[in-house]
Image 1 (tube, rainbow, N blue to C red):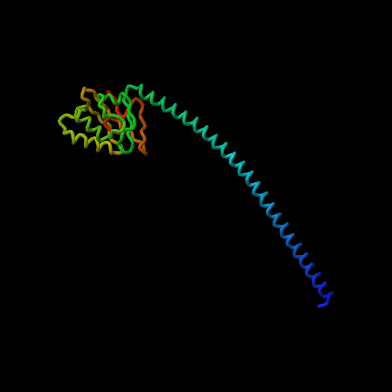
Image 2: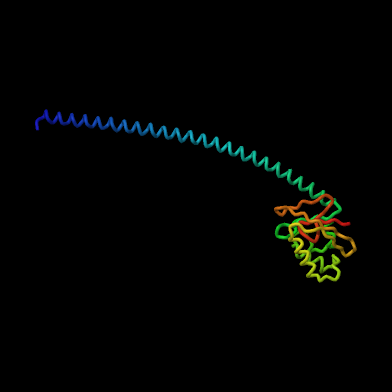
Length: 205
């Protein structure tokens, strides 16, 4: 190969290398620009995310504050309601759907003459047992088991007829049943819950 041919070949090789370098530089520039755009996008997303986090934190704080105020109002209302219940002369008690006593005021519990078992948590069937076993109610000549079964059957009725029973001390109790559709208790005016039946009402006469 002549010297001229070798020089021409080297020149072509050099030009090819320069073109390849330019191509790689262009690719590198494009990659850097794409990477820069992506980094900017991530940076914007971080800023937006931080703003959203700050907003959510502020909203959570507001909600917590409002919940705290609402909870305080509920507690005040509950205290006032319970104070009112405790001051009435009639007894009051509430039983849940499992026939278990939830709350009762002093007037209600006084019927049981401070029996320790007669307190929130006691079941309705057990109360019926206490009423007969302790002689709190005057059932006459009716067998205690029959009386309890009759009272249990009456309680299970949707709309029982009013009835009257007699306590051991001769006082009479007029029973009025008012049952809510979901088990809630609505107390009629000048009436209290019957100690013989959950979610029922009575009044001493």
